[in-house]
Length: 301
Image (cartoon, rainbow, N blue to C red):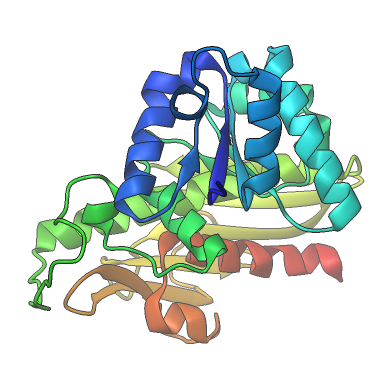
């Protein structure tokens, strides 16, 4: 029987990562092939695994130091990479577990996965499940349902507008800023891995401000600053590129404010130079990707 995803993982990650992820997928209407549910006493493990990989639309690979050091998960990964190479279709969806140093070690042990866009496991399966739903072309479920809380499947929920407090907005702004900073750090690491002539530094100025600089053969090629607040308003994330003074926040190229649609909070570009997607409903990761692409224009010239 075909499944939406096959879970490739080490047994050490089953309790903390795989089971919460599978439960959240089930609540979102996404079917998963996971060994403890599919392989019964006396079954051929190899035959079952081969059948599960072949029938699944995608393979979610839980990449941890445990799985990177074990032969069986690596054999599964290599098999799916061969399928990708022969078909040209995306099959592997990497989910990295661990801190920045651990993730770097994992990707070094599995160089063929270095060009893959990956998600980082933070203990909450909702983000990964929402991204998986997008890949599968399924309607993205309500966050409460994805995380395993939520209402029974199929019941009607009236659309009642939510009122967000100042505390809600402040927390969202801080979390969004941290998500942008983490995206830049991961993207900088990836850039350095793939281009030996490039050095890229992401440095905190304060807990609410960081800078990013990229050098090509030692020459500064592009730089930007991202921070919370500034001269115009405190409840916004500001972006400035090109020559800058890290201590002077009076100049900016983009301002992202926290707004809501009566159901969720999101970021909106007030200057409007980031494109219609962020103006409609900018999730922090989408905004981070747009800012990173803008920063990288200096390297592409």
